[in-house]
Length: 314
Picture 1 (cartoon, rainbow, N blue to C red):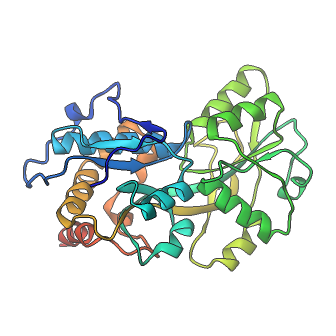
Picture 2 (picture 1 turned 45 degrees about the vertical axis):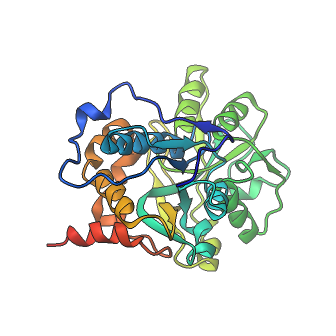
């Protein structure tokens, strides 16, 4: 498999509670022969990087040695490019970004749905999507799924906004300081950077809101049928913030088609057979389950992953 990448590489670390102590070893199946795997995730403050670290730790435990290295990237668009170039072995990629690559990529599984947040300060000038022209708006890093989807939304709404490039953590801090008026974030919930923003704002007597995008997302969902679904950001996810409506896009763990079949099955099995323990470490991993894991349209399941899902049917 590919060697390690110099570019912004973050080795998968050991969490405060070792998954090895929580998860049974996969002793019932042969351990594939593999020396090194690289897994493209996302930037600081994003669930992609946090969930990716937890998955890599789980896979390393199952393989009984350190094999999987985490690669910090801008996120989905960056990850698709790295996979195409053969620079990484696995990567988080969203369904909308992945669609042009359906003949080149295969999916191990659907990991969760990424939700588009438009965060603003409650005492700020932005109340609706239509308020964004002329404002300072962070639309994610250049290679992020946030930028890809946010620009689609703005284009469908006929809005001209100067896209400002911020990572998740930097954008959250800039919104609170007044450097930004609004922040787009496409990621699973709860998003670490936004979670911290809500707490930091509350500590200084201010509040964060998510702009309701129910009407605004109709056009982009019609323009790209099957790629997006309507969802609600519930106040149970971010306490003290009113519920709002937006869109979500499925996020997959993708590999190139030539990825070894036995290894694909092994990684898929070790993920789903221990999904409960993964969700104890990462709340967004609660979405990892066999009922939705095989739903990877428009990307086909890798034959090795399909083997495992097929075996689970009675």
